[in-house]
Length: 279
Image (cartoon, rainbow, N blue to C red; front, side):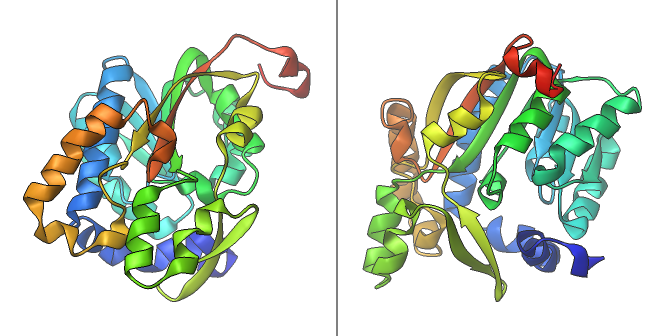
């Protein structure tokens, strides 16, 4: 099965057994995750049905399930989905192997089986940056979300001063400015190459219009540094706590300077693109 996976899915599949232990110990990741979770709890209707795109090992999905949400996690990595399914089983929630690129096909099969629409969808920590073309993702979500439903998508920011500073201090100036590049950019995980795309705000909004309208943007990790600052920042908890407080002040006015940016989109009523098959 692994040989048929896309390069990004193959890379994450290979690190699935150690993923939580490695990244879960990093305080900068935990701080950014808290910011995303706070936004989710503030915006998602209590107890609603939620779709997660690129949910990995299910850390965020399990958190929402614990708070009473009915959740379906999707991810392209079979190993990740297996771990997520184990976490979600006790809540009566589930996980399925589905790549974001295939979300439109997934939507057609899902709806053909008579399954219910979702009230909301989210994606955390940039799995959508592994997708070159976001329009199929938008079309799939437009089919899966009820009118008025919210999509909360967390992708990499394209101008992260935190990353620029950290990578420059580490003697890697080329890495410091990689997010300014257009098109696909080479990345590596567990010695496996794959490509990411640093989607501009205008590109994302164009892909999702007119099925979705932007409600707000929030910066995730403006003062809180990216994971490239690990493990150093984890050894300075008081400094990180101050950065986390500062992020809460800067999250909206300086949203586009985040390590990640949370785009909060609302599903509109049937649009002119309905003639393409989106209802």
